[in-house]
Amino acid sequence: MKSLLVTFSFAILSTQALAEGPHHATSPYAQEAGRDIKSLSETDVDELMRGGGWGFAKPAELNRYPGPSHVLLMKDQLELTDDQLQRVRVIFDVMQARASREGMAFVETERALDAAFKSRTITESTLQDLVAKAETSRSRLRFIHLAAHLEVTQILSAEQIAAYGRHRGYSK
Image 1 (cartoon, rainbow, N blue to C red):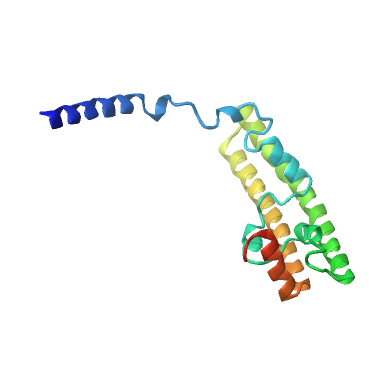
Image 2: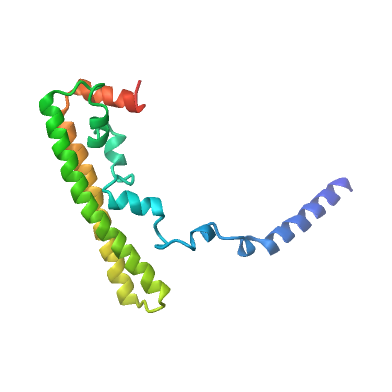
């Protein structure tokens, strides 16, 4: 009898949960409704506009291809030569300038996509064009950052790359 009561109580609670279900839950996106560009936070926009990495280079970074900004910050620990330091600075400056320009283009495309939805004027054709433009820009950004890691790795010695990994916490 006790087992039947437990089963019956569970069935009632389960039915109640299904009735209330996720259909009545607050969206996890609710706090993002006030954003200027719905798909990007202010932090995202700032990062993209200044040419920041935005996580694009993780495949390189986490597979022992050091990034130029971190190498510059760790120049003393890595014992960079003057030549290496100069070359990494050039790679960083070029990467940041290119990424900043492309980041601005990406942000503007996301802004246009958001505006088209906001104005309720978007069509399937416009949607396809804007998404393609945004993804092309995103692809360029990712390439810019990954290519910089590739370039820096060619400048550093195996010992410096190992030290970079240790200092970044990737290896012991």
